[in-house]
Every structure is written in structure tokens, then in C-alpha cells.
Image 1 (tube, one colour):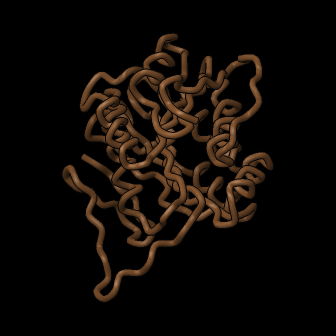
Image 2 (cartoon, helix red, strand yellow):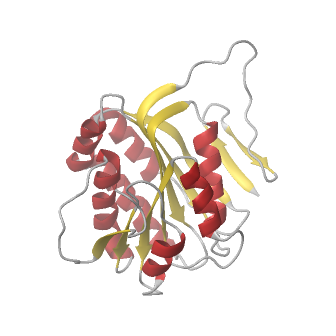
Length: 253
């Protein structure tokens, strides 16, 4: 099942195969314009232990408290970013853990960091369906109340897809819609997962991949990755120490 958490409703909505949203009667409100719509998709499959999952969540929370991320938000434009956090595992298990949040400065970024830090693990176990995670993220981008100059899916994980739609097919559909997919490959179980992400997962204008040698290295890697994708500008090349940034050679930018 797909899972959706809505603060407005104050309850969990379980939908079979689709996400349903209620629209008030009358004229539809115009979308809120932002510089970036960003989906953070975090691996919660069977290969991720409770400790490893906590390292991902706390790393993301620390990143949104970091002055470098705040600087990147300012550098991206005057409209801020809309960001949501997703947990994913097998083909029919995705969960909107933190709903769409508008972040324009330090106060909003701090509040979003607190929400991330307090987020429990909603999915335990299951296979690795990267294609399913990408489909879910695409629906979230299409169904929110924001209109971004850029739309990005940031997917992290430690394994190759072993069920569901092939991620490359979903990736190609997303790219055709103007969505960029960036990856963070965690190499603790499979050193070749970075090559897999590069070939089958990332795509779109300026798409890139970063690696973390293990979950302890995740916090630094996700910080550098967020700075790069929020600001929309390349970072300086540096040696790989626990992480490495690599551009998809087949993608412009």
C-alpha cells in the first residue's frame, strides 16, 4: 500500500495504488511559486537497520540546521523551497513522513529539521523498489500546492532494485517531465551500487550522484549534496573522503 501522512487531516490515508486528495469546491487556488520543489526519499528497506535508519534521519535534520544549507536556500532565489520527506522500501510501501513544507529562511529550516528529527520509522522491512519510490515522488510533485522553477527527487539507498518497475524506465519518464533525479549511494553492502545508480537511477539537467562509504558517512554526504542541489550550482571538486560526487556523464549540465 501507499501511505500518505497529512497534517491538515491529522490522520493517515491509505490508498490502493493511487493518492487521492480532496479539493474544496469553487475556483482552484493558484500554486505557490517556489525556486525548488524537493522530495527527499530515504531507504527504509530490510537492508537498513534501525541504527542505520536513525543515522539517515539525524543526518538530514542536522543538514537543515547547517548555515551552509541556509546559504544555499538564499542563493537559489527569493522564493524558497518546498520540501517533503519520504520513506520507501518495496514496491507498494512508500510513506510521506513529513508533508510538504515551505522553507525560506532559518526559522522555517529549523522547524523542518525538528520535524525530521522527530520522525519515526513508518516502514520496517521489505524489498528495494527504487522505481516505486520514484513513482511515488513524482505523484507528490504533481499533487502538491507548489510550482517550482526546478523539481528534484533526492533518493538515497544502499542496494539495487530487486522488485517493481525498473528504475531507468521511471527515471526516463521523470526526466521527460523536467524532473531531475539525484542519488546518494551508500556503499556499506555493495560497492557497485554507485555505478547502478549512475546508470539506472539519476537523470535530468545537472543530475549527479554522491557516495557514502557507510551510514556514518551519510551526514556529511547529504549535507554537501543538499547544498549542491538546493543552490543549483556545482561544488568544487575535492578528494573522496567518506563520500564522492560524480556527475552522470550522459546528462547535460
